[in-house]
Image (cartoon, rainbow, N blue to C red; front, side):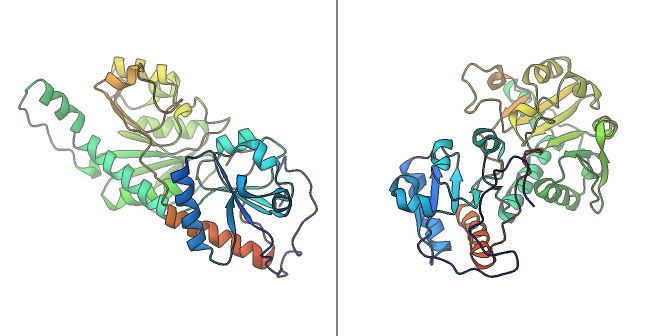
Length: 337
């Protein structure tokens, strides 16, 4: 299905359902703003996953090769380089988050395919569980007591006595909810459209968000950044949270209004925030978030891309397209994911 905003182009593949012959004259372009070591590592991983294909960095392709290239594998690419590949059937992102890519390529972009990697879902679910345990076992309070040289055991809270509300029930959110359930937590979830997950009470819509926030001891944000989610967690939403609840944001920084969060921390409406994503990264040295004892700052590490696993996912998409002409599932440019 053609995505909104995609420009019309003559297809370079056989009609759906018919196999097309793979052409070894059609290179795969690696396009990205990365340093030499990272580029080499990606080239090696992709070459190992695609032994029958030619993968080359954009700058190594001459004009004729660029004119033949049907697939660009990208990581924060220069939009001008993507536009210099006029025959693209699709752009394969090496990241799960594509809001920057969608924004920079604009409405005339070729079809964009985000990375959907089961390995990333597993790692993110591990991170959500680890930091949920961190909050459930009162580690921030013990850290404060240590700084004050206070020896005072705190009451133990059982996982089943705590509700974790997961915002975003896509592949990452569903995996995280499952791990939390297995650990004994009560889990609720919110999503843009209605979804059903075993063992999870799910909510949808504005009223559903209010209801989930009111009952959650820990709120975990795994939402993508879209026009609808930018600034979603603001003063209004923090006021709707269960008094003293904690926040984990592993989605995108601009979803949380940082100033509103700081004020909610100052009043005690939010007890602690674990933040792995920020409006600007790296986090500025003068940001007040660095020095707050009620904030844990992480350097965007909770869902790292595994090159070997990611390359295997990319290879699967490339080979399926080579064999059938079918495009992988594309990003909805209207929704932004």
